[in-house]
Image (cartoon, rainbow, N blue to C red; front, top):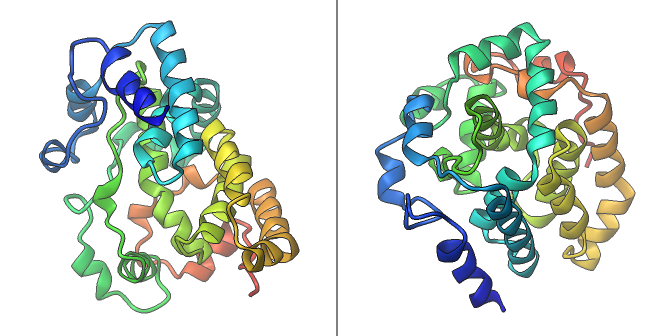
Length: 261
C-alpha cells in the first residue's frame, strides 16, 4: 500500500511540468534567497482533483510513516488553503507581519549568518537559535520549497511557517523528540489552524512512550494549549531583526510563560 501511494504521489498525480514531486537537494542548494524566483521555479500547477488526491495520499502516507517530512509538507500545501488565508489575514493586521509579507525574508544558511549568531551573548535569540540547531543536529536548509500552492502570497505564508518552525522550537525550549514535536504542533495548531499541525498533534501523541505520555498529559499538553491560545501570533515576529534580543524579553512580549519542567 505504501509503495503504491508513493508512486501515485510522485508520478500519477502531478502533471508533466516536473517529474519529481519533491525537489532534490542539489536543486535546493541553488535557491533560498529570493522567494519569488524560487516560487516560479518550483511551482507545480495542479487541478482541484489532483490537489484532493495529493492531500488524501500524503495524509495516509504521513500516518503510515510520520518521519516522511515530504508527505507532511504536501499535505500542508494541498489541505491547508483556508488556514493559509487565516494566517495571511493575521499577518496583514500586524505592522511587523505586513513588513514580513512585503520583504518576504528567507531563513537558511545563505540568508542567516550562523557563525555571527554563535558569537552573540547567551540568552539572546540568535545564540539560542544556533544552540538549538547544534544540539539537535538540525540545519535551516532542510525546509522544502513550496510547490503546490498557486497564490504567491499564500505560498510565502506556508514557506515562512516552515522556516520559523525551528525558531519556535528554540524560543519554547522544546527538543526535536516526539514529545517536543507534539507539544510544538499543539501550539502551532491553535495559532495557524493548519490541518497538518492538528493531525500531527493528535496522532503524534499516540506514538509517545508511556513515560512521555505521563508528562504530556500532566504538563506539556496543558501548557501547549495555554500558549497556543493566549500568546501573540508567532508568524508576526520578524525574527531576523531580533537576533540580539534576549529570549526572555521576547517571550514576555509574546505573552508566553516558559515551560516549567
